[in-house]
Figure 1 (spheres, helix red, strand yellow):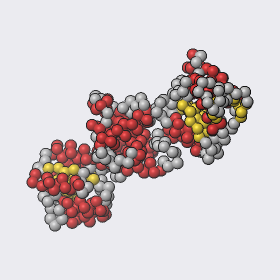
Figure 2: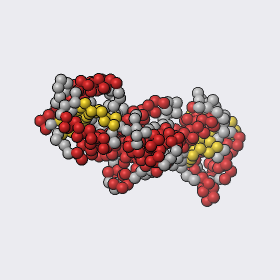
Figure 3: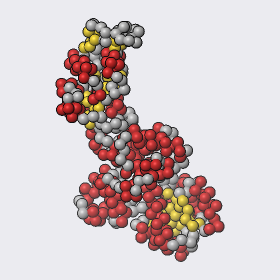
Figure 4: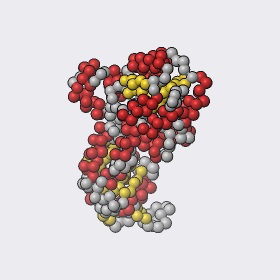
Length: 439
């Protein structure tokens, strides 16, 4: 895309054409104006335009026909129709054919300026959605983990590096950050990928049940043990076991886990026969295990055994740049054909996300259900998003603020050197920032 939004303006009334051109140029657009719709069609085949403003009533080609030609020649161009009061029905029909909006004549200079800025925001959102979908295609091979965050990519690189070994991995991260997905990623990139991947949620079971779940039991070992049962370690033999919420394990089970990590040996509950298996252990916790060790609720020797390699997942609020990408990912997962409005996306970006990616997934699933494949607006999001103050809703991370400021400067600068001068940075630095922000 050029540094200024490229606009094609077509109206057979010279006064309106001249006034509208001046107005759009004050917004910072690069405007190519035509009084002849035939010449405009020729221009569409020669140059790419971001936005098109067409008068509806023209000869020999009217705005509706020009819209159809634009959809055929340049489908990524955002089209707006300008129409007199008596032609609003036709303008609405044009929107069904792909026009983004219509502007009713006559209009004030300030009205057109404000309207054009909103159209440009919509165009940039559509452009971002296209980029995000392309990124989703390129992100195949990382399972369900999609990211554009450099910090998150470093975590994934580390996970792939340790995957080829048998080292025990401790995954730290808040609830909902994707710890199990990361464990899957490690397993799928390991030599054990064709072998079992077994998951145990240590917080979901009582102490006696957890021990039986992990190590198995024999008939009569306790009330209700009516037959022999193998444990999860046996089931995971030659593969990987994922121990989620390891910080919730009781002290007596911690002792047995320590022994297993040291020797890969254990006994079923109620039996004295020692069994040995070949299992790679990945554990996860949303607690600070170092603090648990200091408080005496978690064994120090077990912690160091588990912590042979630590991988820490950042919370979603610290990788806000991933939110648009994740939104597109979940829209695709829930088979939505709709998009998300700029206002709704801004609200998602500024939210605190205590539940992290899992919470975002739930919010998008709810919004898809309520929107019924139409555009997801702010009113489709839960109440807490709608009741945020304007200041909170529009709050930006430092990175997002920098990105938006660079976009504004690029729109008004005549070239990259001038943009770098306005920003008071080296042109090479600007080049790197443009690449980083996909500008």
